[in-house]
Image (cartoon, rainbow, N blue to C red; front, top):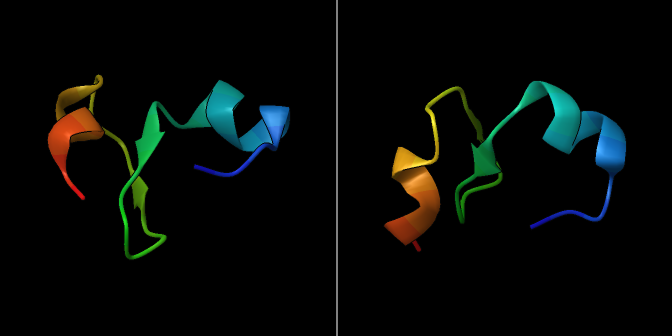
Length: 31
């Protein structure tokens, strides 16, 4: 995950492909 607090604030998680996943932490296992 990126260390950018701004992204994390707007996005719950970011998958391995670097795409912003607008899911409530469901993408935490993706990778």
